[in-house]
Structure formats: structure tokens, C-alpha cells
Image (cartoon, rainbow, N blue to C red; front, side, top):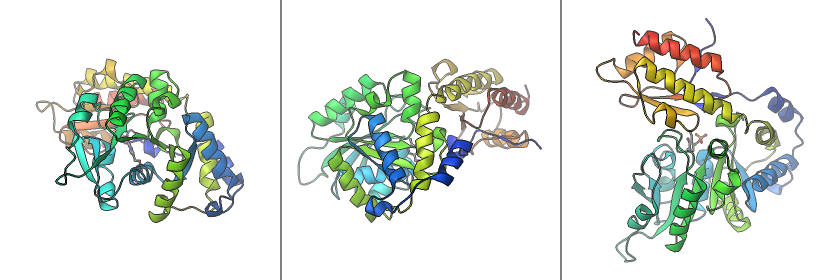
Length: 346
Ligand SMILES: Cc1ncc(COP(=O)(O)O)c(C=O)c1O
């Protein structure tokens, strides 16, 4: 049987041949002593690219979010999160487990909060209430359908948060998808935030790694928190080497994944699925589609697709996510569309 068309996630991407070569040949040292030249080179490169003073390599975007949030809050604080955000729903409650923090979920429109909602989520300063100290944003927003926050939207939210005395963390696990889709530098999207998570896996195809970015003082504190979380590294140049290749070679090509996602969204809609956001509004590489109740059971669609050699994650209710990435060609997108049509009996 042919290799399956794997649309489960952009995390299924494999390192490129150039990454494997760079990893094999990486100069390394003990990062605890800041002796690893490749880690330092990646951190400096990322900081320059994102327009921040400093960066720190961590193992995952989940760890980057956790470390960023803990480094800017005190135990018992509350943090404002978007209700369908990854940080709130998909990180095993880390900020509560390890930080003693209370999330304050607010539902955005396609994942986007408004400055008014941020203000409304504050609590009066009284002994009754936790102190609300941080606003968390997500760009692109995964569960909302890979939607982007523009520079102006990010700026308006951060300005409001700062005026209210909050810090701002940006979960930019897919910030380069947003940057490519919007045609603006990632640094412009990161500028309003005090701390930023950037993921090197996902569409950038590294085998492991993410970055925490912000001011030098913030990153110094984040290093302490990373140590407490068991995330200190040694000869991590073997990981960082792939990250350098990713930043050099894998960012601009994300446009292909976005074009493939829009095409796939159209094929899914033509096959009878309820694509939301609709095909013409698909912004990046994530496509969500509802299986209409009258048509078929969503789980049966997923199982039918598996038999056709197309992999997607189990549905959430009637909703199925399709993700394009470096490992999926335009031809495979057409084949996936045909498979969906066959499964739905079209
Ligand atoms: C928006 C967002 N943030 C953070 C993460 C966490 O990434 P990881 O699972 O690699 O730690 C993900 C993973 O999909 C994500 O979509």
C-alpha cells in the first residue's frame, strides 16, 4: 500500500536531509555552561528574527508556554486565556499544576479577543480575587482554524493589557504561518508581546524544539524556570542545528501549505462537508470541517478515510481537522479530496 496521506497534524513532519546533516555535524558543548555554540547561534538568530533581546531553546512549545507564563506571574495569580486556546485546553493544565495559576477563559471570535473583552475579564482589586497579571494570545490560533491575529489586532490587545497593568504572552507556535499569510515580518507580530513562544517542529519540520523570546531580563528568569521544570540542556546543539536550518529554509515555503489548505477546504466543501471557516477564509494550514448529521457519522468518515490511506485525528463531536504541511504535496491534496468524496458516497 502507498504511504498514507497524513493530515493529522503538522507535527508529523520529518527533519529535512539538510537538518539531518547539520545535526550530525553540529558543534556542541554543555549548554548549562553556555558552552554550546550551536544553541547560542540559534538563540541569537531567533532573537534577531523576532526582534527580541534574547531567546532560549526549550524542548517543546508546551514547555515554552509554561516557562513564559511562570516567569511572569506569581503563584495564585490569574491569567486571561482564549477559551479554545491550546494553552488552556491542551497543555495538561500545566500553568495551574506547576504555577498555581487560575486561568480566566474568554471566548473570542475565531479565536480573536477584543480589547473590551480583556478589560471585562479583569477582577476588582480586592482580597477576594486573584490578581490578574497576564494576557495570553495565540497566533495562529489552532482550534479556531489557523486564524491570524494581525499586527494591529495584536497591538490593540497588548496596549489595552499594558494599560491595565498586565504582561502579554504570545503563543506563536505557528507565528511564521501568520507572518507568511499576512505578508508581515514575524517581528512585527511579536513586537507588542512581552514574551513569545515559537515552535520549531510543526510546519518548520524540526524533530524537537521551541524557543522562548523576550527581554534579556525575562529570558534570564525563564532560564531559572526552565531549570525548575527539568528542561535544562547539555549538548543541545544537535537539536539547535536543525532549528537553524528550519529558520533559514522552511519559513517561506509555508505559503505552499496554505495554498494546499485552501484547495483542500474547497474539495471538502464540494464533497459535502461544512468547512468552517469557509474555504475562501482559510488563512493558513489548518482546515476544520463538520460532517453534517444527515450525511454520515463523523467517526465513520475518519475510519473510511483511514481505509483510503488518508489519516486524520478522531473527530471532536462532528468536527474533523485536516492539516497540510511539508509532507503533503498538492497532488496528495487532490487525492485526499477524491478519497473524501468516495467515503461520503459522492
Ligand atoms: C498553538 C499551539 N501552541 C502550543 C502547542 C504545543 O506544541 P507541542 O505539543 O509541540 O509542545 C501547539 C501544538 O499543537 C499549538 O497548536
